[in-house]
Length: 498
Image (cartoon, rainbow, N blue to C red; front, side, top):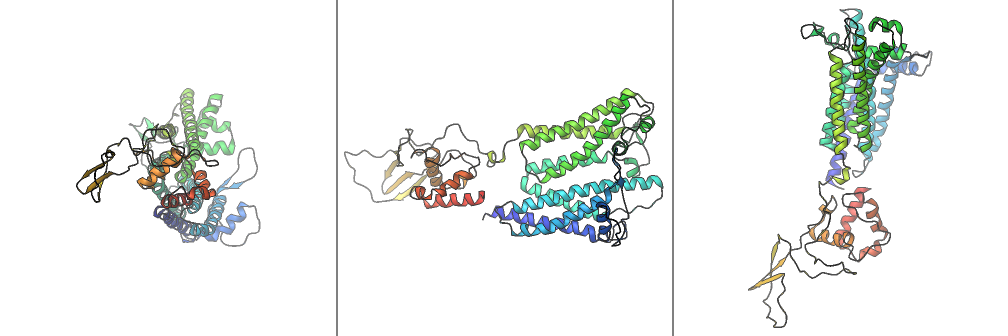
């Protein structure tokens, strides 16, 4: 059991437990809507979500967000749905604490369970945070002096704590890749923030910049992106709304309306996917998907800007925040494209080793491999050479036997060249001693005994689980050919791969 694997498991367990504590605090801190426990509103949220009537348990939800998609009649209460989902993932997280604690350090169980619970919880609480901001904006719009109590237990402790633990795991496990994912997620969060009425949200005294030439909004005089998205999803292509906002109901106005709403929707979806990517393993397919989704978002924003200019409505133009969102999406696209272009599988870059086209062994003569394993006479020595003194009695010179070229005798000290491995390496070969590296290379890379039936080739830096497994399947064949030290390290490698 390696120390590295043990430390990874401990980190997963500690961060997972902290995330669970944060999720539980969101339910039991008496600050929900400034005065109560969210836990007491769970029965009402559950019954509202699943359409159960006659609930008399607990407290009524202090905040609701009923929503009906265009073309349907069923009402969805997003507040009840998100709180119910939050409760379900918390219960699942408590149950998953058992496999996390019981998992072996050489398995990925602990990290996988922690990733699943933390990512799902973070995405659910991200949706709740959007609802919270919308509640606040509706409250201050309805009454300038209205009091609003933020649900700090949910959006601050539960969401913030869970997301922080996810980031810590990513930085610890993935190093540079984890940092790039964090940067992308921060940009995504900033992109979502541009969808809201920033002057109202932060209480800005001015609505303009550049001497009144540019609104600090998403579009025109006070229109934010998320409201346009909400209108499209709830009311479809409402001509009265388009006439009010865009000053037209023509096809150009419809395209502008749809593109603005879809750009806002893509910004929200992309940030949710950025949260998922923080703890996920990087693969070529996910990087390609990243490029595609950022391209779609950028195209929607560009189309919206072009269509609004084509409409040429007085007082209604693209404002600051839509340009900020465009810049963010372009930066994310560039990052994703670069990562996709330079991507290499993790196994091939694990040790940063460069495998030469031809392998050579500085202890072996440059001759064709022998049919049977035997020591080869040294005909050349590749520098540098490490010398070791070996004390022995001086030998009488024999007139018929010339002195060996690899040894030099002076008095009673005999210097012999130490065998040094200069061949290709990877994470497994680098853990072997020089003699074990040479033994392994001769047996399985040079194949001096010929190919072994039913034994796959060893791929340097590749996935060799089947190779190591086959060694032990045919243990009787290799027990007499491999040293005990090499056999033990092959066994340890097989355990790590499993």
